[in-house]
Image (cartoon, rainbow, N blue to C red; front, side):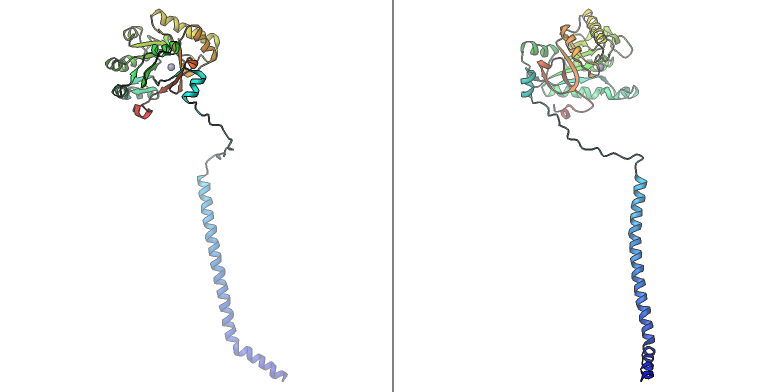
Length: 307
Ligand SMILES: [Zn+2]
């Protein structure tokens, strides 16, 4: 029985040996296939990650961009006309257009003056546009009279100003202003008059009348800091303009738009009536008459500025 059962077992194994071997091979095969697939899958993922990493490395900027911590900044809300009027009034809506060079594009490009230039054809179109839209061109004394006596200024008025006294004002801007009968103010650094590329006293006297020639310091200096220099710059130009019977009413424009309370009180002591910055805005208030905003005009249609 023992042998029989042994031989029985042996014969059972013998009987199914082939089947078992096939079964084991099949199981091993399936397992290998599963592992192989898995390995490929995981390798596929890791390759993608490697690609992503390579891309990151290749596109990484040379220095990291710091993410600024957002700090809550109060957005200064511009004062309404009514608020300005109660704080600094009386006020008036009066756009003061600010120009520097008026010249052709080629000349501006050659002299690297494009950023301060309105091309002559644009300027012509802008002035014609205001004329066609029936804007009222006020003179500087209309504004100073408003401040001093409350004289009214019609709605849809504009004031045209130029800075720096460049010669192209005589050749390119003035003929258009003259043809259309548009008054304007030119702020000149008096010490630069008669220099190359600047107006001459002779040209200025020809244009005086339609154009008010006003104070923009003697040497186009920053008068923000030094008290002595500030006084010298303002008073020298004031005297030179007075000697040529110019600058009446007395008005001033700050070089580089840089103001100071010292300069404001000095201008007031010399009987100046108004002073202009380069700060953008169109509400002009008596209480801010030495800190008046303007609108810098570029090579675009005036309708794009809201006119
Ligand atoms: Zn200037």
